[in-house]
Structures are given as structure tokens and as C-alpha cells.
Length: 176
Image (cartoon, rainbow, N blue to C red; front, side, top):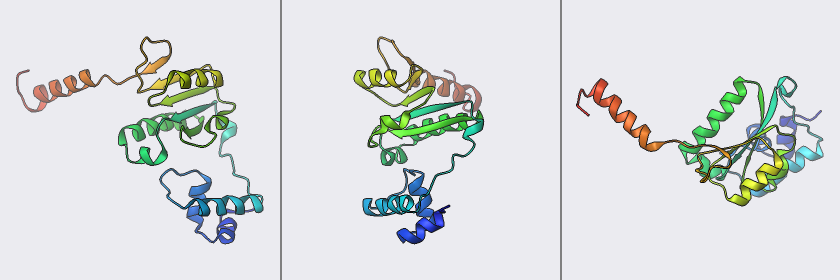
């Protein structure tokens, strides 16, 4: 059975690069030619990615991020939302199929999911498409008006009000 080290030797890259390419690491920046060389080497050697602990998961959840991996790496807000969802899934043995809307053929990567979390802003056409993929869909950080879908939106106004209230009462000792 082929290993990451075997692929690295054939593709003439580091084992770390192979691992990050095969795991679709959004923070890795490599030329398309290098990425393709690694994928070709993996195919040539018959590399099969191990599905870690898929057998003891309770369900598979799809996560769609509306921005690209590069944009996400520069946006701590959306990065933290996705990481929070993934952390919850990991702790609760929920398998994840993570995609970015900017990925080529991203919808086909969401086969056999029982739930779908869509992080960001989506069009009505996107909403209808996602509902066809999975009946259990939730939108995070998207105001849907009128509400016909399940969505969660941070109330920034009340959050700021709560912070100012807390600071004035507990730290600054200022009247509100």
C-alpha cells in the first residue's frame, strides 16, 4: 500500500506538502502543477486515503463555506464559525464533509449527508439547490427575510449593548 512518503518521493515534494494537498488544506499555497503532480503520483501508486473513525460516527454533516479558503484564512470571523462547528462535530462523533462554494464541483462532494450547515450569505437559488441535496439545512450568519429556512444570525446590536453594560457595571463602575 502506498504511503505519503512514497507519493512525496515520486512527486518530488515534502511529505508535509503531500499530506496538506491530499487533505485539501486551505492555507497551503502551491502552484497548480505541483498539486496536480501530487494527485497524479497518488493515483499512480494507488493511494487510498484512510477514513479515520468513520465507522463510529453518528451521522455525516456537510459544511459549505461561502468564501474561498484564502478569504477564510484572512477572515477570523468566518474561520471561527467553521472551526466551532467542526469542533462540535468532532466532540460528538459527527463526520464532516467540508467544501467551499468556490471549489470545483463542490456539490458532488456532499453525497450521503444527513445535515447541511451553510456558513455565509447565499442566493435564493443556492438555498433551493441545497434543499434538494439535503432536507436538514441551516444557514449561519445569513438573514433570511421573510424566514422560510432555519437560520442563525448574530445580534450585533444587543451583543455590543451587553458588553458595554458588563464593562460599566463590573469593571469601569460607570453608570449606564
